[in-house]
Length: 334
Ligand code: NAD
Ligand code: MG
Image 1 (cartoon, helix red, strand yellow):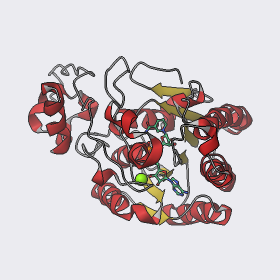
Image 2 (cartoon, helix red, strand yellow):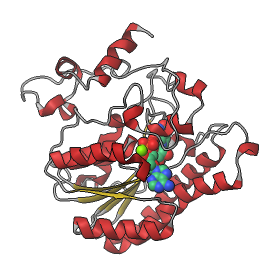
Image 3 (cartoon, protein in one colour):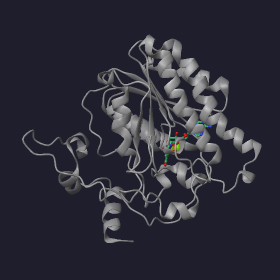
Image 4 (tube, rainbow, N blue to C red):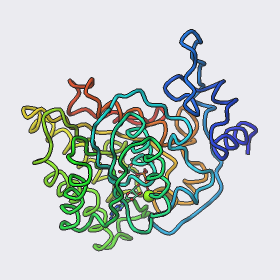
């Protein structure tokens, strides 16, 4: 492990320490809520040095995996994300809100003033508890609705419950997904194929249909797609198709819902350090060098995408619809 790697890893494990925060964190991400003085220039942050780089330790968890068991622990902005009222009073439902990009969005939304409901699988309760506590710490409503999105009846119940407990809905982040690497198409059973398609294509369809009657003009739908939509890996045959489908539904729905004043956009991450990757999403070999071939030389952290989810949900992005915003360390196109 390089000296750089040790340095970054300590910061992530211990949360962003005050010294790093002072030295390297721009205003919106200033640690511990301490905004820099208006007259203090924001320090420059070198994106190649901010977070851990490969080589990583081999590690494997049973699917769906827990962020709290990863080494190093991912950064979802727990200590660093600082809001500025951009989503004051909004009501958001985020699937896969316990970990990864969904958790980063949940933390950021709460700090921007939104009430947040999260969905996750019952096995992810330990991660979900941490997120619920973080949302509550902002004085916002935090609603936990565990359940399996492969079930159409549950998807409808999820939306109904979120609407009931939040008192409405105006931001839907359809983010949950299943990704399992298989070296050959011959290794993918019909059951596995169906699992991926149900989670990644059917569930957003069911959830958006259930949510639409509740969404007023000004509401936003955000889907998490991937660079896999446009640059699919050999071992992600089924998953990559679903991400192409996600990008397509974003563009189709944006045209359909534009006249109703509902915006629909996508986020396309590159390699991001999340439980999905250590619970079958990537091979051990790929994990050890994860993100290493990107121009930034490292994987992204969920926290680095939080502001994109905020931007796409915020009212001042009112002319952005049908867009896919990428964050891939310089590789791939959204
Ligand atoms: P993650 O494991 O933290 O999040 C995925 C979530 O999906 C899980 O937390 C789980 O709650 C949820 N989920 C999966 N199956 C479910 C089911 N049947 N019922 C209910 N919930 C279910 O990983 P992540 O990487 O943050 O994934 C979030 C999104 O980002 C996904 O859409 C994924 O495709 C996308 N993405 C990830 C990467 C990456 O490198 N990590 C890259 C591109 C796109
Ligand atoms: Mg999870």
